[in-house]
Image 1: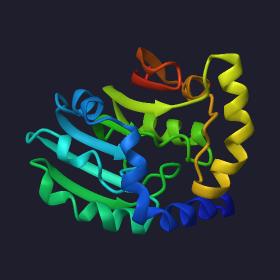
Image 2 (image 1 turned 135 degrees about the vertical axis):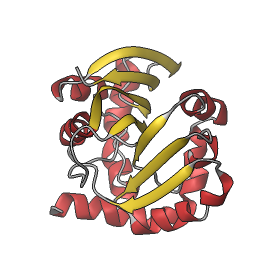
Image 3 (image 1 turned 90 degrees about the vertical axis):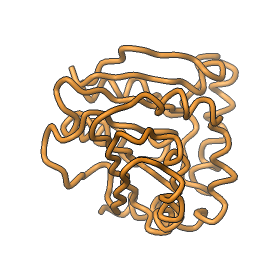
Image 4 (image 1 turned 180 degrees about the vertical axis):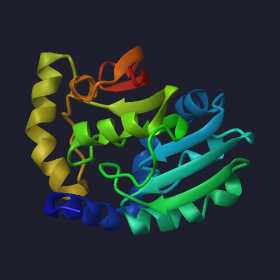
Length: 201
């Protein structure tokens, strides 16, 4: 783990006790729509404190990874609130310890604002998802509105320092740089929050 990644990891360890409050920016209805109809072997990248776990259906196997041990400790406390089969692992999304073509579906919710090298993270997702698999995401990113984008650019150094999250990431560009294809893109909160469905080719 490089120095930058270690710094972000420590920031997420630090905010783990209050992260559930922060995570309420993602509405329960959005999580239910994203996760309720999934099937097969699922990887959740950046599982955090486990806010998604209650929304998985009973017929799936979910492996959740996070690089913050304190966030994972909170997630373990939510495993009894889900009908799915859950496995949690401490792991860096930029360097995953899974073979190629392992998962039917990869999930992320507000994760790629904090991955230090988001293109590397997306490339790892592309590697571990099956060729006929898909990636489903709820991600916030830089606004397409010029004025709002300038505001996000201005506050970004502060949000990174406090919580390790970039509020002005050009996530669609990063997805395309990693060789993934955006199949669906729905705006949930102007252009800042979006539901995405990606494929590995």
